[in-house]
Length: 202
Length: 132
Image (cartoon, rainbow over all chains, first blue to last red; front, side):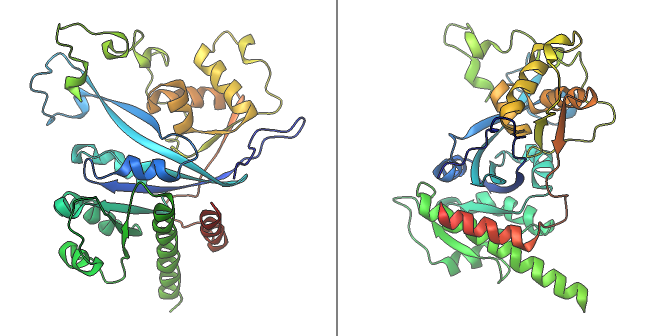
């Protein structure tokens, strides 16, 4: 489905409500692949420059002449309706760029933590991050070819997840599979919001 | 990341050599815009319908003019503008701040942080995803 966001002659352009979902996980786990599987645009890249002054502990061995570093974030867009647009942001992989996560996660609907069962420890940090900030997230286990399949419950145990965090097996290349994961994020966010409202009411 | 620009012969070409103009030169060295809190990556920039021709304003850079043009036909998010103009997000934020100040564009804010959008919007998102 393609929606026309362009302004019709004489009419002001539609100002859409925008929402975002984050896709987090270790390096090479398939974040950009997942974004690309459902995005209506080829994933775009935004960059932010960091100056050396802001990163005193950064390892710059071998690049002594380099004064700035670029943090890249890939993102995609899904126009759900002319006035409702969902953006997906792949979070920067390296932990030293976590200050960028704070900005990204502000106002986010929720997140997907993409996990590879061969390197489950790569997503510990992301799980921890979203838990601490009470950001709704689901764990998507990317079923790589050649990787042993584990039941979702084993992954839940290994990651020590709260019982209400959904764990979904997925294929980051497959559009239908990724749609299911994203719907899972929104449903989980709704559920948590409802629980919070109930807690406030009592 | 840092190794990418290194060629075997020690030469850099094109993009690998880095920008010809240092990006923050476009903002005249400013890293923030007065009276502007940080714009979210999904904040949407809309050109004011009655905005005049930005090229008439000598204080505006070509990148300012480009943003006004891009957001006239189709409102764009901060992230899309940064990707489209191939500029760092921080630079684009300053440029947008200038344009808001000049009343050439306005910015629609996404759902405020720490607040979940309306349940009906969330239902619309689920329905929209199912229908993809």
